[in-house]
Length: 481
Image (cartoon, rainbow, N blue to C red):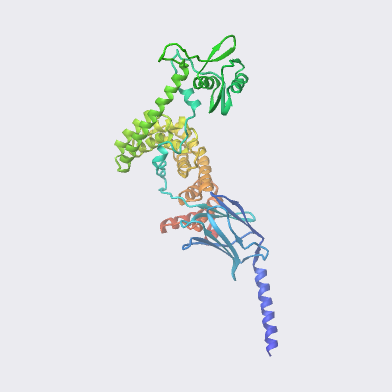
């Protein structure tokens, strides 16, 4: 009797397994194809027709269930990504189908998108960033670096000595150095060998007196060779005399007669002028730094107009401080003075054309001033520059859609936003809407369906409208599914 029951149970299990295997499908392969700090992409090789996704908290994780689809025994069941978006991925089979769980590397979670492309299902995850935007409105202007150290030149681009020399306006009676720029690094180098090197660099004949003795230690980067030579002569108390493309270098002799006699060393006027220029610049920067500190304290107290007066005063003293110019442009924009904001943004861009923040400030100010051609150019610079800013892409797409009516270009920028930063409700709705306007009904329908499955918080009225759009675009049959 027991044996008969065992046989019957075995047959039933066999039949159940056969039915399940015949009605289900196998997932051929699951692998990570991109794993960076900006994006994680996992690919599932199988034509999956049904899945459900849900986000859970404590800890934050994304759970995806595949009804009727199972992973093979050879499939790797655990991944540990190297990026900082997802900490671990678990893969396994359940009674009703396979399940994949993505655990977030951060408490704030991540943004995700699931899309089907032929035989593949692609799951993309992006880090979550704070977005404050209302549909049809430009995003709030991103604040420049908030730490005061960035304004005091600790983290910003420093002007090189060669650039200061180039930008310095020297009076006509004091000619500028025109020699080829060089970088030298001497450590206790013999002076005769140093002058031989300058002869090779300059193409000049150099004769050095036997009375010239000693060594020199110095390091110069990207300066004219004739400027470097003058500095060495001044430091070593030497002089040069030029005769027919030849320099004769000798020591400056001290007069023996007369106790307490004042000895005057001849110094190059060019070197003196540039030394004074550099010294004045350092003094101006120190004064500007003190003014910036005062302005920063006023800004913290929300006394923006008084702070702006001081920031402008500092900008006059420290003309190449990009962070200071951006701060001034940002504050003028916030108080509604778009002309001054545009002016300071353009000054920052002139110094660093690759600064995305400065270009964005200028673009939005240009929009307010109805300078649409300038705005388009500055938006292009903002999306091409660094760092990559979400607001630059979203605002540019909205500008193209609303102001220039360039729907195709706007659609491309919205999609670039989602590729770089992940989808948000506003970009997804815009993409679906633009596809619909272009007559791409199938793509618009797919995007609306993606919005419903993406986990966005949708109001009942918006959800109803999206379902209505799906019904109109996809037809009655698709809506029932």
